[in-house]
Amino acid sequence: MLRIIVLGSAAGGGLPQWNCNCPGCREARTEPSLRNGQCALAVSADGEHWFLINASPDLRQQILDTPALHPRHGLRHSPIAGVVLTNAEVDAVAGLLTLREGWPFAIHAHPEVLAVLAANPIFGVLREDLVPRLPLSLDRPFEPALPDGTPSGLTVEAFAVPGKPALYREEAGAAEGDSLGLRLSAGGRQAFVLPGCAEVTPDLAARLAGVDLVFFDGTLWSDDEMIRAGLSQKTGRRMGHISISGPEGAMAALEPLGIGRKVFVHINNSNPVLLPGSPERAEAERAGWCVPSPGMEFVA
Image 1 (cartoon, rainbow, N blue to C red):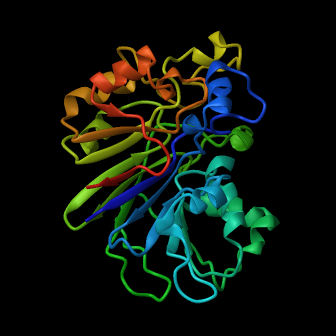
Image 2: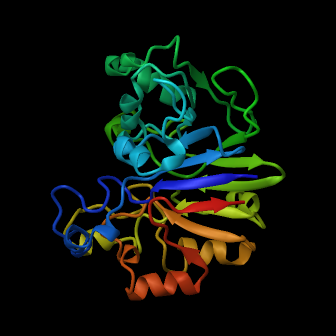
């Protein structure tokens, strides 16, 4: 069995963003059910031990809101056995600092991402004798161990997807590990997680064809969305994200692949698909997509 809990499905800054007054953020301030943390997932093969997919800046609140991640034994305990990072964005790594209270878990990431952590002394609060930093290799499945060394029952395979470097690393240029997708498997079932993706290439389409469950980049409804909203001068492609809609968007690209369940994550506050009752939400749902709320659980 493969269990996945959505801890947050919004993009950077969450919904509402702290200084944004766009329609979605205004509505989320008055309607608590719309509030959403930044994108992160928790995955488990046994329902007892959980691995985080990225560590959102909202992680403390996400853990508080997720009973499966609460301490259960003794004075110090956590079901969190590890963290798998798909990139070096602030929104993916800042939550690691929340996990500094002396509990063992492992960080699994591309060597380029581990180098970012090593270069910033603030991440030294995570003692490496308790929190080892383990490099992952692309296209090589591995089974992350539990803190006591026993098998987790979960298999993870990382692979490169079209994207871009983290914002603060753009001047250094593109590097391997900038944007990863993950194939998660357990008990003969599998799910794919792609929180950032700029394009559905033929290779990626072949990977996703016929799979049980896909969590996919839903950052923007349209490529120029943030420009038209007056929030930015960048297109979605400039930010490394495919659009949801349009003939070259995610819905069109994944529609013929025979995927069992399709879930949008990393959804920007400007994206009207976040709002129940919007025409965009209705269109996405007609196309077989789910826009998840925090705490929603999927079993593959």
